[in-house]
Length: 381
Picture: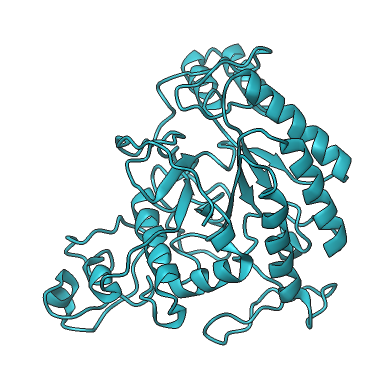
């Protein structure tokens, strides 16, 4: 596993409202160091327009909240263009971050059949085109320090893939070759890691999905096939809303599963049971269980069987986790939205009443968690 050590400080609480501290001046031409050491990109035009409109309407309080929000460190998405265009975009970000003595978070989102050609369709059209584009990104990074989020959904949605349990992937785009599409996906991610690793200070993280998506063993299996042992680790919850507490459990279980090597038999969040002496056994009886619910925070002490995690450490035994991960906390302050009972609730995209999660930081208080990051831009549709 390729990583660098960082210090850790306990982060206090989830925040369901806008952040109370402004660390950088939005839109400033002279980037300033941030308290976290993470890069604050210029705010998007839509955010500035909304601030102007709120001030024109006399709602200064709301305008100030958005101003504080866009003043937090956030990721820069690199999603398209030629290799030279990608190199230029990344090089400009690296220059700005270096000037402010900060570390940028770069999201690479251009793999063929991105999002299975659905709502976020796009991406390169061939393996060769994609790897050429990654090469451009790598040249843009150069010798600078960067955290790289490599292809959100890249392992959660794989064209024509059969998962660890023998279930065929639902993603079967007509333009993809069923015989090669899944193998191509793993090949591209492995090659991308190797190319980015040639940049001496780039830390690359692979897609570990989130705690309400892939089962632990399935996520671990896909990560290994994509080359996680040569990466800094994996990322969780990009563009989603799962509770940070639950993601800490899930990420730790994936890390333990990776260490165990027995991916098929790793405990997972969809079957929660355990032997005598665990809280879940007291609640349900030995080795009976229920799926964990995403609509509450998990703990070893919960009296709700759907939130109790006491059996997992027992079932993993003495396996020691070593693979690190980062968590997107940009929109998870209040956890996931429980959709009302009507068709097609679309809880994947800007569900109502959500809030910002923990501020971006490299000091997480957890030795496995390298950072809490705002990967998805809060407020963006």
